Length: 428
Image (tube, rainbow, N blue to C red; front, side, top):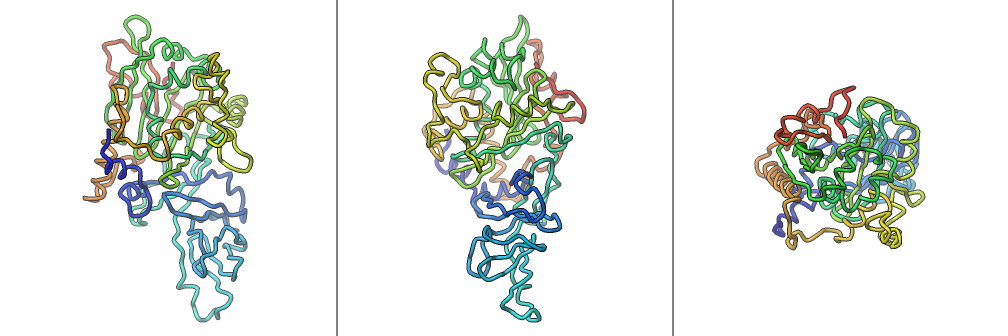
């Protein structure tokens, strides 16, 4: 368990907090590129790390992420007109470019230079893959652009979605590094979901529901190995990389695409669950991409016009007790993503970790918390750059392998855990 002050430190990410400063060291996903599809398209409200921002794409194709509110009277610029190289407040006509610089105050003489004195807070917004990324820290510390493999493969090889999750980022992320629940919560999906079924590894998940965990440090965070019994003299290993602060990658199944997540704080009680699927050596099949769009695997269907899941706490996640009774779904909630989210949200907006009773299968979670605490305090107290920023820390993969019982996964699967272009992923 954690002490209250430790729990508070890890879960609070507003400006000026220890973990808020920590997240502001990284490029983080801000929007899907589809949200700003063309020049002068409508602006989009964005809330990240407790800050209310506005994203837009100007007439030249430049992306902007600026303070949502006009410096004049505090009007939300979401109501503004995106036109001719900037966004204009509809209240009194003040106009801002993509850097947040005010470029026109109609009521003031141009020669007065008044507008040059006005500049909104702004953050860089760049497109890598099908995601728009932002860096919200000091300009002088801006890191290299993201190198995650899913965002660097060809467009036909990758698919990304996001969903609003109504709980703190940490309890959502901790679900992403917990392999022990797969044999229970997701058991009904292993044989039915088109993005999971047919893999030989599924039988190991179902036949051995008491995995042994071996967690080792990596340069960017941890490798979390879950070991289950396989054929005589062999173990089935599912190895999950966690890269600070909140990247996780699900071990693959057969030739299905590889998938993973980012968990990005909106504020202390909500987060964006980003989900990606990609294949390192081939284009996604039409039926795979369609299944992702249809909310299969780790993706969801939405309330129309939003990124809120259609199954949500207001409708009890469309719980189906009959499906639960007959075993179609173990929890009665349909879909892997919402099976996770429903239980994580049921803990409350921020779970009280002082009341937990952790066991051996929670070792990955325990070690991740300790590494986060150490790294966040090192940044806060000594200015030490945290892990996960260096692009080489981002060139990781998950892996599923069967190894002889006398072989260490850290050694035997070392090459499988490194992302290399056109190299097939290690899967069972």
